[in-house]
Length: 568
Image 1 (cartoon, rainbow, N blue to C red):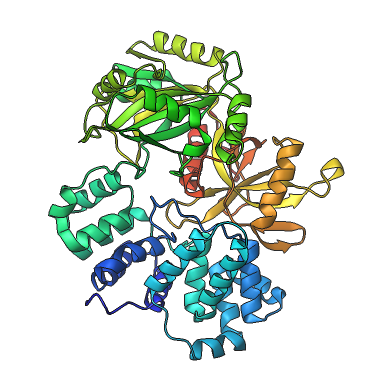
Image 2 (tube, rainbow, N blue to C red; image 1 turned 180 degrees about the horizontal axis):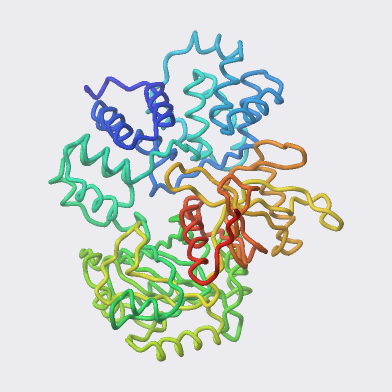
Protein backbone atom coordinates (compact mmCIF):
# COMPACT_ATOMS: atom_id res chain seq x y z
CA UNK A 1 0.00 0.00 0.00
CA UNK A 2 1.27 3.47 -0.87
CA UNK A 3 2.06 5.65 2.11
CA UNK A 4 -0.40 8.37 0.97
CA UNK A 5 -3.37 5.98 0.77
CA UNK A 6 -4.77 6.04 4.28
CA UNK A 7 -6.94 3.31 5.74
CA UNK A 8 -10.40 4.26 6.91
CA UNK A 9 -11.21 3.98 10.59
CA UNK A 10 -14.33 2.10 9.57
CA UNK A 11 -12.19 -0.81 8.33
CA UNK A 12 -10.58 -1.14 11.76
CA UNK A 13 -13.97 -0.81 13.46
CA UNK A 14 -15.48 -3.55 11.30
CA UNK A 15 -12.51 -5.82 11.99
CA UNK A 16 -12.94 -5.22 15.72
CA UNK A 17 -16.60 -6.21 15.44
CA UNK A 18 -15.66 -9.31 13.44
CA UNK A 19 -13.23 -10.37 16.18
CA UNK A 20 -15.97 -9.93 18.75
CA UNK A 21 -18.24 -12.41 17.00
CA UNK A 22 -15.82 -15.33 16.66
CA UNK A 23 -14.18 -17.51 19.28
CA UNK A 24 -11.91 -19.35 16.82
CA UNK A 25 -8.39 -18.17 17.48
CA UNK A 26 -6.94 -19.12 14.10
CA UNK A 27 -9.73 -17.24 12.32
CA UNK A 28 -9.01 -14.17 14.48
CA UNK A 29 -5.26 -14.37 13.82
CA UNK A 30 -5.80 -14.73 10.07
CA UNK A 31 -8.17 -11.74 9.94
CA UNK A 32 -5.83 -9.44 11.86
CA UNK A 33 -2.79 -10.68 9.95
CA UNK A 34 -4.43 -9.92 6.61
CA UNK A 35 -5.50 -6.46 7.83
CA UNK A 36 -2.03 -5.55 9.12
CA UNK A 37 -0.42 -6.73 5.89
CA UNK A 38 -2.45 -4.20 3.88
CA UNK A 39 -1.45 -1.19 5.99
CA UNK A 40 1.09 1.53 5.31
CA UNK A 41 4.08 1.43 7.66
CA UNK A 42 2.95 4.50 9.62
CA UNK A 43 -0.47 2.89 10.21
CA UNK A 44 0.74 -0.37 11.74
CA UNK A 45 1.44 0.68 15.33
CA UNK A 46 -1.77 2.75 15.71
CA UNK A 47 -3.80 -0.14 14.31
CA UNK A 48 -2.24 -2.69 16.67
CA UNK A 49 -2.72 -0.41 19.68
CA UNK A 50 -6.35 0.35 18.84
CA UNK A 51 -7.24 -3.28 18.18
CA UNK A 52 -5.95 -4.02 21.68
CA UNK A 53 -8.09 -1.18 23.10
CA UNK A 54 -5.27 1.33 23.62
CA UNK A 55 -5.38 4.89 22.29
CA UNK A 56 -1.55 5.07 22.41
CA UNK A 57 1.44 2.71 22.50
CA UNK A 58 1.86 0.88 25.78
CA UNK A 59 5.00 2.88 26.64
CA UNK A 60 3.45 6.26 25.94
CA UNK A 61 3.07 8.62 28.92
CA UNK A 62 -0.01 10.18 27.31
CA UNK A 63 -3.36 9.76 29.05
CA UNK A 64 -6.76 10.98 27.86
CA UNK A 65 -8.04 11.96 31.34
CA UNK A 66 -11.62 11.75 30.08
CA UNK A 67 -14.18 10.20 32.42
CA UNK A 68 -17.14 8.06 31.40
CA UNK A 69 -19.41 10.73 32.88
CA UNK A 70 -18.01 13.23 30.36
CA UNK A 71 -18.10 10.77 27.48
CA UNK A 72 -21.68 9.74 28.16
CA UNK A 73 -22.75 13.38 28.15
CA UNK A 74 -21.06 13.85 24.76
CA UNK A 75 -22.90 10.81 23.35
CA UNK A 76 -26.17 12.16 24.69
CA UNK A 77 -25.61 15.58 23.07
CA UNK A 78 -24.61 14.13 19.69
CA UNK A 79 -27.47 11.65 19.42
CA UNK A 80 -30.08 13.84 21.17
CA UNK A 81 -31.63 10.78 22.77
CA UNK A 82 -33.25 10.29 26.12
CA UNK A 83 -30.60 8.67 28.31
CA UNK A 84 -33.02 5.90 29.22
CA UNK A 85 -32.66 4.67 25.62
CA UNK A 86 -28.93 4.20 26.14
CA UNK A 87 -29.54 2.48 29.47
CA UNK A 88 -31.98 0.08 27.83
CA UNK A 89 -29.47 -0.63 25.04
CA UNK A 90 -26.81 -1.32 27.63
CA UNK A 91 -29.17 -3.63 29.53
CA UNK A 92 -29.78 -5.61 26.33
CA UNK A 93 -26.14 -5.83 25.20
CA UNK A 94 -24.14 -5.61 28.45
CA UNK A 95 -21.52 -3.66 26.53
CA UNK A 96 -20.91 0.11 26.37
CA UNK A 97 -19.65 0.00 22.79
CA UNK A 98 -22.62 -2.01 21.56
CA UNK A 99 -25.03 0.31 23.39
CA UNK A 100 -23.33 3.31 21.74
CA UNK A 101 -23.67 1.70 18.32
CA UNK A 102 -27.36 1.08 18.93
CA UNK A 103 -28.17 4.66 19.93
CA UNK A 104 -26.15 5.99 16.97
CA UNK A 105 -28.17 3.73 14.65
CA UNK A 106 -31.41 5.08 16.12
CA UNK A 107 -30.34 8.72 16.01
CA UNK A 108 -31.51 10.74 13.03
CA UNK A 109 -29.01 13.47 13.92
CA UNK A 110 -25.93 11.23 13.66
CA UNK A 111 -27.15 9.57 10.45
CA UNK A 112 -27.52 12.94 8.77
CA UNK A 113 -24.17 14.23 10.03
CA UNK A 114 -22.21 11.21 8.77
CA UNK A 115 -23.75 11.51 5.28
CA UNK A 116 -22.01 14.86 4.79
CA UNK A 117 -18.68 14.12 6.51
CA UNK A 118 -15.45 13.04 4.89
CA UNK A 119 -14.55 9.47 5.94
CA UNK A 120 -12.34 9.20 9.01
CA UNK A 121 -8.95 7.52 8.79
CA UNK A 122 -7.58 5.91 11.90
CA UNK A 123 -4.46 8.09 11.68
CA UNK A 124 -6.81 11.06 12.04
CA UNK A 125 -8.31 9.37 15.08
CA UNK A 126 -4.85 8.83 16.59
CA UNK A 127 -3.81 12.45 15.90
CA UNK A 128 -6.98 13.77 17.49
CA UNK A 129 -6.55 11.57 20.56
CA UNK A 130 -2.97 12.80 20.93
CA UNK A 131 -4.31 16.37 20.86
CA UNK A 132 -6.84 15.47 23.56
CA UNK A 133 -4.11 13.97 25.75
CA UNK A 134 -1.78 16.93 25.24
CA UNK A 135 -4.34 19.52 26.37
CA UNK A 136 -3.52 20.77 29.87
CA UNK A 137 -4.17 23.81 32.00
CA UNK A 138 -7.01 26.29 32.17
CA UNK A 139 -9.90 25.47 29.84
CA UNK A 140 -8.43 22.13 28.79
CA UNK A 141 -11.48 20.13 29.88
CA UNK A 142 -13.81 22.09 27.60
CA UNK A 143 -11.34 21.82 24.71
CA UNK A 144 -11.05 18.07 25.20
CA UNK A 145 -14.83 17.74 25.15
CA UNK A 146 -15.10 19.79 21.94
CA UNK A 147 -12.49 17.67 20.18
CA UNK A 148 -14.03 14.35 21.23
CA UNK A 149 -17.48 15.67 20.27
CA UNK A 150 -16.20 16.57 16.80
CA UNK A 151 -14.54 13.18 16.42
CA UNK A 152 -17.57 11.15 17.53
CA UNK A 153 -19.81 13.40 15.42
CA UNK A 154 -18.04 12.11 12.30
CA UNK A 155 -18.50 8.46 13.25
CA UNK A 156 -20.86 5.93 11.77
CA UNK A 157 -22.48 3.62 14.34
CA UNK A 158 -19.81 0.91 14.03
CA UNK A 159 -17.06 3.53 14.23
CA UNK A 160 -18.65 5.12 17.30
CA UNK A 161 -18.73 1.70 18.97
CA UNK A 162 -15.04 1.14 18.30
CA UNK A 163 -13.97 4.65 19.27
CA UNK A 164 -15.84 4.56 22.57
CA UNK A 165 -14.22 1.21 23.40
CA UNK A 166 -10.79 2.71 22.70
CA UNK A 167 -11.58 5.81 24.77
CA UNK A 168 -12.55 3.75 27.81
CA UNK A 169 -9.89 1.08 27.20
CA UNK A 170 -12.38 -1.78 27.10
CA UNK A 171 -12.17 -3.55 23.73
CA UNK A 172 -13.30 -6.99 25.01
CA UNK A 173 -13.00 -8.83 21.69
CA UNK A 174 -11.00 -11.71 23.19
CA UNK A 175 -8.09 -10.79 20.92
CA UNK A 176 -5.30 -10.35 23.43
CA UNK A 177 -1.62 -9.49 23.10
CA UNK A 178 -0.48 -13.11 22.69
CA UNK A 179 -2.76 -13.54 19.67
CA UNK A 180 -1.57 -10.20 18.28
CA UNK A 181 2.03 -11.45 18.41
CA UNK A 182 0.97 -14.43 16.29
CA UNK A 183 -0.83 -12.14 13.83
CA UNK A 184 2.23 -9.88 13.52
CA UNK A 185 4.44 -12.92 12.94
CA UNK A 186 2.19 -14.13 10.14
CA UNK A 187 1.58 -10.71 8.57
CA UNK A 188 5.25 -9.85 8.18
CA UNK A 189 6.79 -13.34 7.92
CA UNK A 190 8.83 -12.98 11.11
CA UNK A 191 9.40 -15.99 13.41
CA UNK A 192 7.06 -15.86 16.42
CA UNK A 193 10.03 -16.25 18.78
CA UNK A 194 11.59 -13.07 17.34
CA UNK A 195 8.29 -11.17 17.71
CA UNK A 196 7.92 -12.28 21.33
CA UNK A 197 11.50 -11.37 22.19
CA UNK A 198 11.00 -7.97 20.58
CA UNK A 199 7.86 -7.37 22.63
CA UNK A 200 9.74 -8.33 25.79
CA UNK A 201 12.55 -5.87 25.11
CA UNK A 202 10.55 -2.97 23.65
CA UNK A 203 7.50 -3.45 25.85
CA UNK A 204 5.00 -2.85 23.05
CA UNK A 205 3.80 -5.24 20.35
CA UNK A 206 2.63 -2.29 18.23
CA UNK A 207 6.14 -0.94 17.90
CA UNK A 208 7.41 -4.46 17.18
CA UNK A 209 4.83 -4.75 14.40
CA UNK A 210 5.92 -1.45 12.85
CA UNK A 211 9.58 -2.57 12.80
CA UNK A 212 8.61 -5.99 11.44
CA UNK A 213 6.77 -4.24 8.60
CA UNK A 214 9.73 -2.09 7.55
CA UNK A 215 12.80 -4.05 8.66
CA UNK A 216 11.69 -7.65 9.04
CA UNK A 217 13.22 -10.24 11.37
CA UNK A 218 16.73 -8.88 10.91
CA UNK A 219 15.68 -5.41 12.02
CA UNK A 220 13.91 -6.77 15.09
CA UNK A 221 16.84 -8.96 16.07
CA UNK A 222 19.07 -5.89 16.25
CA UNK A 223 16.82 -3.94 18.61
CA UNK A 224 17.64 -3.54 22.27
CA UNK A 225 16.41 -1.69 25.32
CA UNK A 226 15.71 2.01 24.98
CA UNK A 227 16.46 3.92 28.17
CA UNK A 228 13.39 5.88 29.39
CA UNK A 229 11.12 3.47 27.52
CA UNK A 230 9.59 1.32 30.32
CA UNK A 231 9.71 -2.45 29.95
CA UNK A 232 7.02 -4.96 30.91
CA UNK A 233 7.75 -6.49 34.30
CA UNK A 234 8.55 -10.11 35.01
CA UNK A 235 5.79 -11.53 37.19
CA UNK A 236 5.63 -14.26 39.82
CA UNK A 237 3.28 -17.11 40.64
CA UNK A 238 2.03 -17.90 44.12
CA UNK A 239 3.58 -20.67 46.21
CA UNK A 240 2.01 -22.12 49.33
CA UNK A 241 5.26 -21.99 51.29
CA UNK A 242 9.03 -22.26 51.23
CA UNK A 243 8.92 -26.06 50.83
CA UNK A 244 6.93 -25.80 47.61
CA UNK A 245 9.33 -23.15 46.29
CA UNK A 246 12.35 -25.36 46.95
CA UNK A 247 10.60 -28.28 45.33
CA UNK A 248 9.68 -26.30 42.21
CA UNK A 249 13.19 -24.87 41.88
CA UNK A 250 14.80 -28.26 42.58
CA UNK A 251 17.39 -27.19 45.11
CA UNK A 252 19.11 -23.99 46.16
CA UNK A 253 16.92 -20.93 45.77
CA UNK A 254 17.29 -17.21 46.44
CA UNK A 255 14.76 -16.06 49.05
CA UNK A 256 14.24 -12.30 49.37
CA UNK A 257 12.05 -10.09 51.53
CA UNK A 258 8.74 -9.22 49.89
CA UNK A 259 8.17 -5.67 51.04
CA UNK A 260 4.76 -4.04 51.46
CA UNK A 261 5.69 -1.38 48.97
CA UNK A 262 5.51 -0.34 45.34
CA UNK A 263 7.59 -1.92 42.62
CA UNK A 264 9.48 0.59 40.50
CA UNK A 265 11.54 0.42 37.33
CA UNK A 266 14.37 2.96 37.30
CA UNK A 267 16.00 4.26 34.12
CA UNK A 268 19.26 6.21 34.18
CA UNK A 269 21.26 7.85 31.42
CA UNK A 270 24.23 9.91 32.65
CA UNK A 271 22.70 12.43 35.08
CA UNK A 272 19.07 11.95 34.05
CA UNK A 273 16.86 9.56 36.02
CA UNK A 274 13.24 8.58 35.50
CA UNK A 275 11.13 6.27 37.62
CA UNK A 276 8.19 4.18 36.39
CA UNK A 277 5.52 2.51 38.51
CA UNK A 278 4.27 -1.04 38.22
CA UNK A 279 1.73 0.33 35.75
CA UNK A 280 4.65 1.80 33.73
CA UNK A 281 3.49 5.35 34.41
CA UNK A 282 6.11 8.01 35.08
CA UNK A 283 6.24 8.80 38.82
CA UNK A 284 9.62 10.57 38.79
CA UNK A 285 8.30 13.86 40.15
CA UNK A 286 6.68 12.12 43.13
CA UNK A 287 9.94 10.55 44.35
CA UNK A 288 12.66 13.23 44.33
CA UNK A 289 14.71 11.55 47.08
CA UNK A 290 14.83 8.30 45.08
CA UNK A 291 16.02 10.25 42.03
CA UNK A 292 18.80 11.83 44.09
CA UNK A 293 19.77 8.47 45.56
CA UNK A 294 20.10 6.90 42.11
CA UNK A 295 22.06 9.83 40.68
CA UNK A 296 24.51 9.74 43.58
CA UNK A 297 25.00 5.97 43.76
CA UNK A 298 24.33 3.95 40.62
CA UNK A 299 27.68 3.45 38.94
CA UNK A 300 26.62 3.11 35.33
CA UNK A 301 26.27 5.59 32.48
CA UNK A 302 23.11 3.81 31.37
CA UNK A 303 21.00 1.49 33.46
CA UNK A 304 17.55 -0.06 33.80
CA UNK A 305 17.15 -1.52 37.28
CA UNK A 306 14.24 -2.65 39.42
CA UNK A 307 13.47 -2.05 43.04
CA UNK A 308 10.85 -1.69 45.72
CA UNK A 309 9.95 1.60 47.37
CA UNK A 310 8.42 1.40 50.85
CA UNK A 311 6.99 4.10 53.08
CA UNK A 312 8.60 4.30 56.52
CA UNK A 313 8.10 6.20 59.75
CA UNK A 314 10.82 8.46 61.12
CA UNK A 315 12.32 5.49 62.95
CA UNK A 316 12.70 3.66 59.61
CA UNK A 317 9.99 1.04 60.25
CA UNK A 318 7.63 0.20 57.35
CA UNK A 319 4.17 1.77 57.42
CA UNK A 320 1.05 0.62 55.50
CA UNK A 321 0.91 0.59 51.73
CA UNK A 322 -1.84 3.21 51.41
CA UNK A 323 0.48 5.90 52.81
CA UNK A 324 2.95 5.16 50.03
CA UNK A 325 0.18 5.52 47.44
CA UNK A 326 -0.39 9.06 48.71
CA UNK A 327 3.18 9.80 47.61
CA UNK A 328 2.60 8.33 44.16
CA UNK A 329 -0.57 10.37 43.62
CA UNK A 330 0.98 13.64 44.79
CA UNK A 331 1.93 16.14 42.08
CA UNK A 332 2.22 19.29 44.22
CA UNK A 333 4.08 20.15 47.44
CA UNK A 334 6.26 17.10 46.91
CA UNK A 335 9.02 18.11 49.32
CA UNK A 336 6.49 18.65 52.11
CA UNK A 337 4.96 15.22 51.47
CA UNK A 338 8.45 13.67 51.34
CA UNK A 339 9.10 15.05 54.81
CA UNK A 340 5.82 13.67 56.18
CA UNK A 341 6.02 10.28 54.41
CA UNK A 342 9.66 9.30 53.88
CA UNK A 343 10.44 6.38 51.59
CA UNK A 344 13.25 3.85 51.26
CA UNK A 345 14.46 2.16 48.10
CA UNK A 346 15.64 -1.45 47.88
CA UNK A 347 16.99 -2.68 44.53
CA UNK A 348 16.52 -6.28 43.44
CA UNK A 349 17.30 -6.69 39.73
CA UNK A 350 19.17 -5.25 36.75
CA UNK A 351 17.83 -5.56 33.20
CA UNK A 352 20.31 -3.40 31.33
CA UNK A 353 23.73 -1.93 32.16
CA UNK A 354 25.93 0.24 29.93
CA UNK A 355 24.60 -0.97 26.60
CA UNK A 356 24.21 -4.64 27.53
CA UNK A 357 20.89 -6.44 27.96
CA UNK A 358 20.93 -8.80 30.95
CA UNK A 359 17.60 -10.56 30.48
CA UNK A 360 19.28 -13.80 29.38
CA UNK A 361 21.87 -13.60 32.17
CA UNK A 362 21.12 -15.95 35.10
CA UNK A 363 19.53 -14.25 38.07
CA UNK A 364 22.41 -14.97 40.44
CA UNK A 365 24.80 -13.13 38.08
CA UNK A 366 22.43 -10.20 37.61
CA UNK A 367 22.24 -9.85 41.38
CA UNK A 368 26.02 -9.74 41.67
CA UNK A 369 26.26 -7.08 38.93
CA UNK A 370 23.67 -5.06 40.82
CA UNK A 371 25.72 -5.32 44.03
CA UNK A 372 28.68 -3.87 42.16
CA UNK A 373 26.67 -0.98 40.64
CA UNK A 374 24.28 0.00 43.47
CA UNK A 375 26.70 2.01 45.62
CA UNK A 376 25.08 2.73 48.98
CA UNK A 377 21.56 1.78 47.86
CA UNK A 378 20.59 -1.39 49.76
CA UNK A 379 19.45 -4.49 47.93
CA UNK A 380 16.51 -6.56 49.11
CA UNK A 381 17.57 -8.73 52.04
CA UNK A 382 18.34 -12.20 50.75
CA UNK A 383 19.52 -15.70 51.60
CA UNK A 384 20.38 -18.53 49.21
CA UNK A 385 19.57 -21.95 50.62
CA UNK A 386 18.18 -25.41 49.98
CA UNK A 387 17.06 -25.82 53.62
CA UNK A 388 13.34 -25.66 54.36
CA UNK A 389 14.07 -24.79 58.00
CA UNK A 390 16.47 -21.98 57.14
CA UNK A 391 14.03 -20.54 54.59
CA UNK A 392 11.13 -20.79 57.07
CA UNK A 393 13.17 -18.95 59.73
CA UNK A 394 13.95 -16.25 57.15
CA UNK A 395 10.23 -15.95 56.33
CA UNK A 396 9.37 -15.52 60.01
CA UNK A 397 12.07 -12.87 60.33
CA UNK A 398 10.61 -10.95 57.38
CA UNK A 399 7.13 -11.06 58.89
CA UNK A 400 8.39 -9.97 62.33
CA UNK A 401 9.91 -6.87 60.69
CA UNK A 402 6.59 -5.86 59.16
CA UNK A 403 7.02 -7.17 55.61
CA UNK A 404 4.58 -9.17 53.46
CA UNK A 405 6.52 -12.39 53.02
CA UNK A 406 9.19 -13.67 50.64
CA UNK A 407 10.02 -13.92 46.97
CA UNK A 408 11.72 -17.11 45.79
CA UNK A 409 13.84 -16.82 42.64
CA UNK A 410 15.50 -19.64 40.74
CA UNK A 411 19.25 -18.96 40.59
CA UNK A 412 19.47 -19.71 36.87
CA UNK A 413 16.34 -17.76 35.86
CA UNK A 414 16.51 -15.19 33.11
CA UNK A 415 14.36 -12.07 33.17
CA UNK A 416 11.25 -12.59 31.05
CA UNK A 417 9.38 -9.27 30.73
CA UNK A 418 5.61 -9.47 30.75
CA UNK A 419 5.40 -13.15 31.66
CA UNK A 420 4.33 -14.94 34.82
CA UNK A 421 5.98 -18.22 35.67
CA UNK A 422 7.39 -20.54 38.32
CA UNK A 423 10.92 -19.16 38.11
CA UNK A 424 9.79 -16.39 40.47
CA UNK A 425 7.40 -17.24 43.28
CA UNK A 426 5.52 -15.18 45.89
CA UNK A 427 5.21 -16.61 49.38
CA UNK A 428 2.76 -15.05 51.83
CA UNK A 429 1.75 -16.68 55.12
CA UNK A 430 -1.86 -15.84 54.26
CA UNK A 431 -2.55 -16.89 50.68
CA UNK A 432 -6.26 -16.06 50.73
CA UNK A 433 -5.97 -12.79 48.80
CA UNK A 434 -6.88 -11.89 45.24
CA UNK A 435 -6.51 -8.71 43.22
CA UNK A 436 -9.99 -7.95 41.84
CA UNK A 437 -11.75 -5.13 40.02
CA UNK A 438 -14.80 -3.28 41.35
CA UNK A 439 -17.51 -3.60 38.69
CA UNK A 440 -20.54 -2.34 40.63
CA UNK A 441 -21.49 -0.83 43.97
CA UNK A 442 -24.50 -0.13 46.14
CA UNK A 443 -25.22 2.59 48.66
CA UNK A 444 -24.80 1.56 52.28
CA UNK A 445 -27.08 1.77 55.28
CA UNK A 446 -26.95 3.59 58.59
CA UNK A 447 -23.90 5.82 58.86
CA UNK A 448 -22.81 4.66 55.37
CA UNK A 449 -26.05 5.98 53.86
CA UNK A 450 -25.20 8.19 50.87
CA UNK A 451 -21.89 6.45 50.18
CA UNK A 452 -21.17 3.73 47.63
CA UNK A 453 -19.83 1.24 50.14
CA UNK A 454 -21.00 -2.24 49.09
CA UNK A 455 -18.72 -3.40 46.28
CA UNK A 456 -19.08 -6.13 43.66
CA UNK A 457 -15.68 -7.74 42.98
CA UNK A 458 -14.71 -9.36 39.69
CA UNK A 459 -11.93 -11.50 38.24
CA UNK A 460 -10.91 -11.30 34.58
CA UNK A 461 -11.53 -14.07 32.07
CA UNK A 462 -8.15 -14.40 30.34
CA UNK A 463 -9.82 -15.72 27.17
CA UNK A 464 -12.58 -13.16 26.62
CA UNK A 465 -11.29 -10.25 28.71
CA UNK A 466 -14.67 -10.08 30.46
CA UNK A 467 -14.84 -9.25 34.17
CA UNK A 468 -16.87 -11.84 36.09
CA UNK A 469 -18.13 -11.10 39.62
CA UNK A 470 -16.97 -13.51 42.32
CA UNK A 471 -18.23 -11.75 45.41
CA UNK A 472 -19.43 -8.67 47.22
CA UNK A 473 -18.22 -6.87 50.34
CA UNK A 474 -18.73 -3.75 52.41
CA UNK A 475 -15.76 -4.45 54.68
CA UNK A 476 -12.23 -3.14 54.77
CA UNK A 477 -12.21 0.55 53.80
CA UNK A 478 -12.06 3.47 56.20
CA UNK A 479 -14.71 6.21 56.09
CA UNK A 480 -12.27 8.51 54.29
CA UNK A 481 -11.51 5.81 51.71
CA UNK A 482 -15.24 5.11 51.21
CA UNK A 483 -15.90 8.80 50.49
CA UNK A 484 -13.00 8.91 48.01
CA UNK A 485 -14.18 5.65 46.42
CA UNK A 486 -17.72 7.00 46.06
CA UNK A 487 -16.41 10.01 44.11
CA UNK A 488 -14.26 7.79 41.88
CA UNK A 489 -17.05 5.33 41.13
CA UNK A 490 -19.50 8.09 40.29
CA UNK A 491 -17.10 9.22 37.56
CA UNK A 492 -16.98 5.64 36.24
CA UNK A 493 -20.74 4.97 36.41
CA UNK A 494 -22.28 3.32 33.35
CA UNK A 495 -25.78 2.66 34.62
CA UNK A 496 -27.90 2.70 37.76
CA UNK A 497 -30.26 -0.26 38.06
CA UNK A 498 -32.50 -0.75 41.13
CA UNK A 499 -29.98 0.97 43.38
CA UNK A 500 -27.04 -0.97 41.91
CA UNK A 501 -24.46 1.29 40.27
CA UNK A 502 -22.60 -0.43 37.40
CA UNK A 503 -19.12 1.02 36.82
CA UNK A 504 -16.22 0.62 34.43
CA UNK A 505 -13.73 -1.89 35.91
CA UNK A 506 -10.96 0.60 36.61
CA UNK A 507 -10.42 0.34 40.38
CA UNK A 508 -8.32 -2.62 41.56
CA UNK A 509 -8.46 -3.81 45.17
CA UNK A 510 -6.71 -6.54 47.11
CA UNK A 511 -9.31 -8.82 48.69
CA UNK A 512 -8.87 -11.29 51.55
CA UNK A 513 -11.32 -14.19 51.94
CA UNK A 514 -11.74 -17.39 53.93
CA UNK A 515 -12.50 -19.78 51.09
CA UNK A 516 -14.08 -20.01 47.66
CA UNK A 517 -17.45 -21.74 47.61
CA UNK A 518 -19.96 -22.89 45.05
CA UNK A 519 -22.59 -20.26 44.29
CA UNK A 520 -25.55 -20.03 41.89
CA UNK A 521 -25.60 -16.25 42.45
CA UNK A 522 -22.76 -15.50 40.05
CA UNK A 523 -22.32 -16.52 36.42
CA UNK A 524 -18.93 -18.09 37.15
CA UNK A 525 -20.53 -20.44 39.71
CA UNK A 526 -18.19 -19.43 42.55
CA UNK A 527 -18.19 -16.87 45.35
CA UNK A 528 -15.68 -15.64 47.92
CA UNK A 529 -16.67 -16.38 51.52
CA UNK A 530 -16.18 -13.53 54.04
CA UNK A 531 -14.54 -11.22 51.48
CA UNK A 532 -12.99 -7.99 52.75
CA UNK A 533 -10.88 -5.35 51.03
CA UNK A 534 -7.36 -5.16 52.48
CA UNK A 535 -6.09 -2.32 50.31
CA UNK A 536 -6.69 -0.31 47.16
CA UNK A 537 -4.13 -1.26 44.50
CA UNK A 538 -3.43 2.09 42.87
CA UNK A 539 -0.29 0.53 41.39
CA UNK A 540 -2.22 -2.04 39.32
CA UNK A 541 -4.17 -1.84 36.06
CA UNK A 542 -7.43 -3.71 35.41
CA UNK A 543 -5.53 -6.20 33.25
CA UNK A 544 -3.41 -7.06 36.31
CA UNK A 545 -6.33 -8.48 38.29
CA UNK A 546 -6.44 -12.20 39.00
CA UNK A 547 -8.08 -14.35 36.36
CA UNK A 548 -11.24 -16.37 36.77
CA UNK A 549 -9.09 -19.35 35.72
CA UNK A 550 -6.86 -18.81 38.77
CA UNK A 551 -9.90 -18.45 41.04
CA UNK A 552 -11.26 -21.75 39.67
CA UNK A 553 -7.87 -23.39 40.23
CA UNK A 554 -7.85 -22.28 43.88
CA UNK A 555 -11.42 -23.51 44.26
CA UNK A 556 -10.50 -26.95 42.95
CA UNK A 557 -7.33 -27.09 45.04
CA UNK A 558 -9.38 -26.72 48.22
CA UNK A 559 -10.72 -30.23 47.69
CA UNK A 560 -7.27 -31.74 48.02
CA UNK A 561 -7.72 -31.24 51.77
CA UNK A 562 -11.49 -31.39 52.23
CA UNK A 563 -14.41 -33.35 50.88
CA UNK A 564 -16.58 -32.14 48.03
CA UNK A 565 -20.32 -31.89 48.67
CA UNK A 566 -22.43 -33.45 45.94
CA UNK A 567 -26.18 -33.84 45.64
CA UNK A 568 -28.06 -36.99 44.80
